Length: 330
Image (cartoon, rainbow, N blue to C red):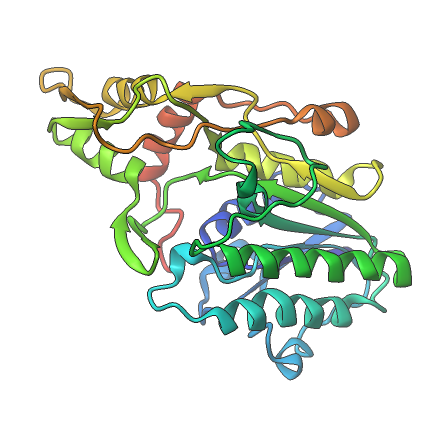
């Protein structure tokens, strides 16, 4: 019997690398095979025996290189993010997030595919902040206008509507996963806010802890946020790929919140040398983080998702990942 294909679009991104590895460890390889797809030219996946296609999803002809016969599922992680946009170019959001998604769905519609897993950020619900601090998966969309995320959020919403159309026209199930920030180790230490390069805050704090340097704690030290580790995200995707639950929207979350004070203290405990501990410098006059929470009751009830990494477990595993060679050759 031919193996069924699982396609991962965006496999060369940070979450894509972790997800590909997770699936290779957990799927039944006698029944399924992973096909990795990304923009980069790389032989990274050769060492895992994974077929890889370097594809531009905005180019329909480029996509035709992929053999999609006998496809079981596709995970679509590909997309343009504000965090990677050094020069504001809103048409890129339209080209990749909307046109690219349409091209993928056109490619897959006659492949026999059972389901599509698609990721979006929480930016389509930012209009609820700061009054509503808990997000539910089926809340009506409410954009926050006037930010560098607005057009991005609109295009991702449009992409979800395209995917839903193929459910009604071709019976392709859809699982839309709404993500908060996903914490992970990668070689990237910078991102963009309003097209200005900045240090990723938790990466910056970890580096200062490693060096035993003072760490500023901005704003309210009791302000909290979800901390979702990438390996719990991977577990979540895996469960959606094999669930019998109906199509719909699902929140990826950790089911616990960590205060800024506890976040920094945890980093000090895990990353500082015992004889050179960083000092926390409180800066209440500076900006606090957003205080919000992803409700995961729906995912827990329908397919048994339970986070496996608490905050300190995430930090300890992150430290191991720093010393691994996961991204070597990418």
